[in-house]
Amino acid sequence: MEKFYITTAIYYVNSKPHIGSVSEAIAADVIARYKRLSNFDVFFSTGTDEHSQKIEAKAKELGIDPQKFVDEAASLWKTIFDKFNISYSRFIRTSDPDHTEVVKDFFVKMYEKGDIYLSTYEGWYCVRDETFLKDSELVEGRCPHCGGEVQRLSEDNYFFRLSKYRDDLLKFYLENPQFVEPESRYNELLNILKGGLQDISVTRKSFKFGIHVPFDEEHTIYVWYDALINYVSAIGYLTNKEMFSKYWPADLHLIGKDITRFHGIVWPAMLMSVGLPLPKKIFAHGFWNLEGMKMSKSLGNVVDPVEFAENFSKLSNITFAKSVDVLRYYLSREAIFGLDGDFRMESFFRRYNSDLANDYGNLINRTLNMLSKYRNLEVPPYSVDDEFVAFAKSKFNQYKEHMEKYALSFALDRVFEIISYLNNYIQVKEPWKLSKETDKLNVVLDTLLEGIAYVSVLLQPFMPNITAFILDEFGVENRNISEYDGQILKKNVLNLFEPIFPRLEKEKIDLDKKTEENEDNVIEISKVKYDDFAKLDLRVAKILSAKRVKNSDKLIELKVSLGKEERTIVAGIGKFYSEEGLIGKKIVIVANLEERRLMGITSQGMLLAASTSNKENLSLLTVDKDIEEGAKIS
Image: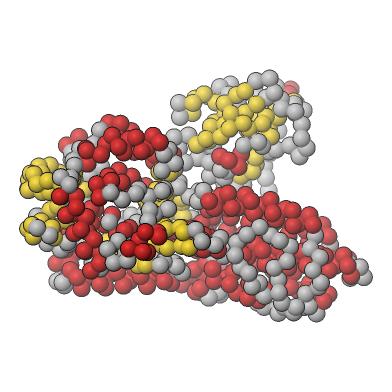
């Protein structure tokens, strides 16, 4: 069985978990569950980062021992992760005895190799970010990362010869362009390497709560050096050589975009120093905003995930476990993984009502009610529609491709395309008209039951509680994620049960702002003259390539073919489409629109798309039959 070792960053315990930190753990859990269900031997590590000056200061402020403070804080983090079904293999703490010994071992090995030396540090230090800064990095005298105050320091420190590994790291990056993703983060680190590296301080003398240098107790090992080593401590670097050799190197370090330099440059250099293989991939995700504003503890606009799930549980009259699954689903579906997301209450309720209550939940309710009415809840002999089997297989291949690239929202899109197919299948086949045509009715009911079971299998990584219930009720024994084979139900008789996702009516949803849609659903249209419309040159274009525009979350640069010519079009569709999902589509463009410069790129036309009034959904206009590129639309 092939192994897969995944880690999250470990989390500072100076405050309670919020939706941003939990979202990283949820994403890692989704990937870990997917890999397990795909027959991988998975080790999943997460945990808490407990040694730092600010932790010592916080404990002193509260009048308690620092170790007692971190014990209580780590327990809180672990409890919340357990409530959100984070299926970690180990919850590591940097105060764990085995980790302490590994940090000391690393330090001694690097020192004996000549990669760590004693010198004097003079410069700026940000306590909040635990970061040393140059004069040139300050912004108006403050930390460029958090905006906090900085201190001027002058003290003896041990330094790591990071500069020594610059050439090796640069060579590695050039040979492994997929080492860091998304591509923008890779390019950012590559540019840092090309500019050269400076040695960095790895100890402090101004605080005591941490791991001390084995041969110089006055020095406390720097928090970042200490924290990075957790990835090897978690799998038995010193205590279990067999387990370590099995799982290392890590297959995926999942981190926030603000700590890519430590993980993408400092950590690989440390591994080179002690002679260990480098991790296979570092994936840096974006941050969650709240209603369009950056989440900040200082602004008081962070979302408490447990409190949110509890409140939604009461509002929707579902269990806390189901409410957790709904939140896991929303965080996985709403934003493209790797980019920033915007947590909006309006979109959360819309996702719940539209995706879960209407599409998935109602599909289950309708199917079971028809099975009760026409078959007394007895599962008919298996005869699944061949067309559905082919469709499910094609969507699974796309789902798998997205999951392997950690494109979680796009994988969910493929699952809901199957759900949409099944809902449409009911409307097309009209089973209520087939009561006297037993064979045809059996095919319809079998197809719906098997389809529900299969999409529930694919949704397991995202909603483990809800899908476990459905798969139990449907009698699905083999729950591994694989291509659909046409028969996964094992029960002969099913049961009716209450709707899994009770629909929320508008009057129950207390939103901060009114809906943008008019109460009477009246759309005002201003008319144009025919001659004005006739000036537009609308053409069919085929998308040849697509790539995200650097430093933009929504712009995608498209290369399109109009038959005898190719053009570049920049479109703001990045929130709704992946690059790979666009290639090959035949779309409609305005070919005679004047050129525009967007983010330094000349756009030679405009594609046409339909969108909802609130801009929460968008669909490209495509042609329903194959037609040559450049064909004129009239």
